[in-house]
Picture 1 (tube, rainbow, N blue to C red):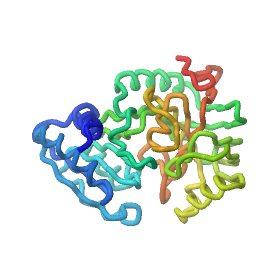
Picture 2 (tube, rainbow, N blue to C red; picture 1 turned 120 degrees about the horizontal axis):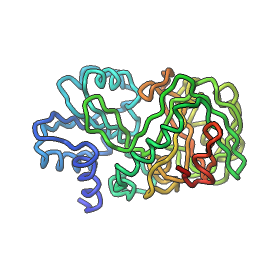
Picture 3 (cartoon, helix red, strand yellow; picture 1 turned 90 degrees about the vertical axis):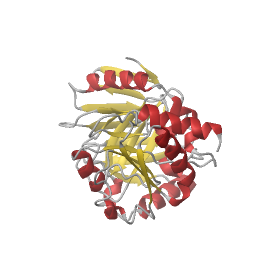
Length: 319
């Protein structure tokens, strides 16, 4: 097995999860991610955890079949294309004490996500930077984002709580993602304005040209033409759920080792000089929208204002 893959697996087991001897550890994985599941299992067994693998077929279609899978499990990781992070099964299990790490391993360049450099980012640095942003957001309820490309967007998060994800998942009831970000589950009917999408299109990957997306009352009402516009429209249509058109999360990347190149959507949305809009299901994030899926659209070098404070200018944090 590739040394870089093993190095990534070791970081996740020993640093992100801090797996302990005797803990009951469940690895849920798609069939095509047997390599990643095996690498994680090797280090989990070195940590003397009681480890089980559950190969799951088409979790998006059969996510309700997860009911009961977390009984007597202390720690679980989802190594699946379809993120289980915001499903009712995970939410219920977390309330009962499970700690859960979402690790969608989708890449578009043929490499295992475990071999990507961004996994080696310092958790404490990302957490400290994220908490500074949280403290700046708490007294306010609106975010304004602009870019030189032409983005001009307003989000509102009245009554919603900002938080930080950075892979760290070490305590009961922790919910974490492999994404490094400060996020807020924005009000689902309040996003207004124009996004000039110039970063990446989540699981779809890189753009050929910047793409205009228009929001009214929280919902995507227009997507630009061309190849990229069709790809995005077709992807959203594949959920067969109009609720996936609604903006439901705003996130700011917190990973200094990440790059937004359209080769891995977790890396794309984690890159420090980016921010993203999440759409669709946001229940586990603290929102109210249940939908058939969740995806992110990423923009480059944003200027982000919270109240009168500019926390990022042209992609540079100002904390």
